[in-house]
Image (tube, rainbow, N blue to C red):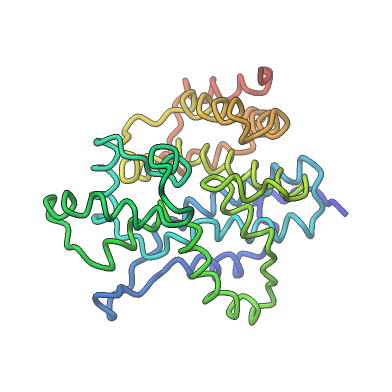
Length: 292
């Protein structure tokens, strides 16, 4: 059964949303009295709202959309504990040096790497250079590397700790929920998935990247980017379509709902509350344009 889409774009209660987002807070392993506040909380919430709206628009029923929104709220839980300074220093350096930052890209450049051991391969090659940058060599620095190159492993490890808490709150975590959260970095994990699971993975990739390209704080910290704009965002989504990672159907739905203004508030929040008139004109143009 499909009901009208809620104005809040939330298919779960706000108390549950807040409880789920609290799981991003992480005790600092080198200072147990310090809690690292979840860096990705706001990104996850904005992404989950857009994802649920697109899934609803494409005809997924309410029960599935509720579980899907929970998965999207937790899609970055594998980066709980992200040490902003340390993570940023490692990955800004890697980007400057043109070092692959995603598992598939790493394996393409280093085909001898054992699948799932990308973190270890990175560490073996570059720990000396990282030490030269003033990075303290140890398990915590390696964990920051794992948050990108070993994301599936870290997500799985944290989800195993989290599942009993979710069960206590009456939430069942299905295997497909983890599959869709991994689709961006590990599209191969959905090769044999049902079409509807694959579509939900595509929606998450499209909405997450739209938010990420609109998120100036995250763009600066993660990607050394300071000029986020919606044209680049949709050009990137087009490139993912050309690569086959998202479908024409999904991209068209994202463009349509964005063009109709459904995501204006969400995208403005990612821009510190501001969208220029020029940007709004571009967003409205998406309502009448079609994906090639």
